[in-house]
Structures are given as C-alpha cells and as structure tokens.
Image 1 (cartoon, rainbow, N blue to C red):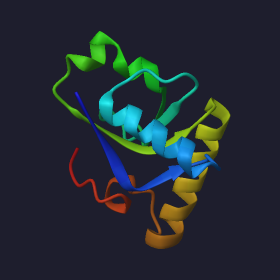
Image 2 (cartoon, rainbow, N blue to C red):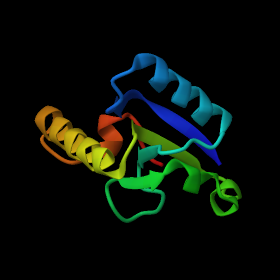
Image 3 (cartoon, rainbow, N blue to C red):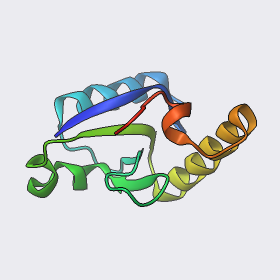
Image 4 (cartoon, rainbow, N blue to C red):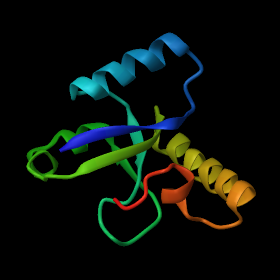
Amino acid sequence: MKFKLADNLYTKYSSEKKFKRFLIKIKLKRPVKNLYVVTAPLYEAGIMEIYNYNELLQPFYRKQKRVISILGVSKTRDEAKELVCDILEDTYSTQGNADIKTYFGLGSI
C-alpha cells in the first residue's frame, strides 16, 4: 500500500503548521488521532470514500498492492463530508460532470 496525496489536496484545517505536520505523518504512515481522509474509490463502485486514517493503516490495507489516492484531509467525519461536497461542486463547475479521476489527474486507478 502506498499513499498518493493529490496536488490540489482539499482540507478544512485552518493552521498551516498543523496541516503540514499531519501530511508528514501520512507520508511516514504514522497513526494520527482524529484524522479523516477523502480518497478516490478503492474499488470500482462509488465516486469518493471517507475513511478514518488509522483504518487505512490496518494489516488488511497494508497487504494490498495498490496506491490510495488521498483527495482531502479533515479533523472530523462531518468536515470530510463537507469536503466531498466541495470537491463535487468544484468538479461540476470546471468540467460539467462528476469525473473525479480526471479532475485530480488520476487517470486509471
């Protein structure tokens, strides 16, 4: 398992310093309390998924040979839901559709 952070990562964090600290922990695959991530779908169904970051560190996900694309980061599940809405609104306004993969330049996952 490997994490890939989107170039235009969405967040609800107001503190730049705290946000960068969380990004470093994600890159090092360290556990983080109260961190939720919005990802591209791990399987074929859906547009986006919300996970507690620590769930992705469990052996089930670690054993998988896939790249997990992180599109957004937040402190709570409710903020993560808001991020999903923000991402969809931005995607519709720029492209006219809900093609998240194209919007983030992910191509085929």
